[in-house]
Image (cartoon, rainbow, N blue to C red; front, top):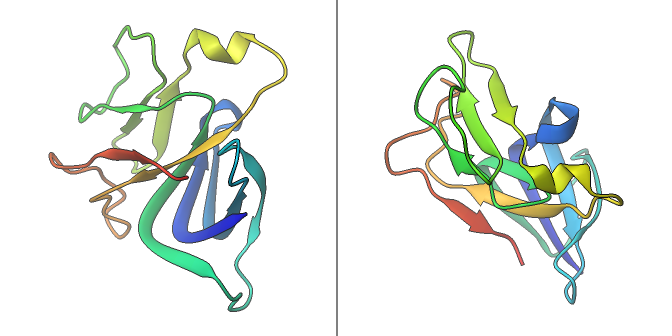
Length: 124
């Protein structure tokens, strides 16, 4: 099992935006085992600045304030009120949902915004 912590955690299918959370990931399947609030230092936990997204598929980033996109993947954007919004892919129509964790690089936590050089990296 691997453990990551981050300033922000976003779960698109729940439209859930959380602060300071830990995510545990299975080493073999790379699926999310659980997530919970960061309340104390836990050994072997890697801290990642910014944003982790728990999604069924690798999300894409839109720098637009509105989600007027058509894509096969889940798409994320930040609206004018600094809230993350998403359009889900068809993967979410399947049950059961298997969530994977993705780290969004260059996410500005204070401004709540993506940057032009933001990238989506799978956490394994």
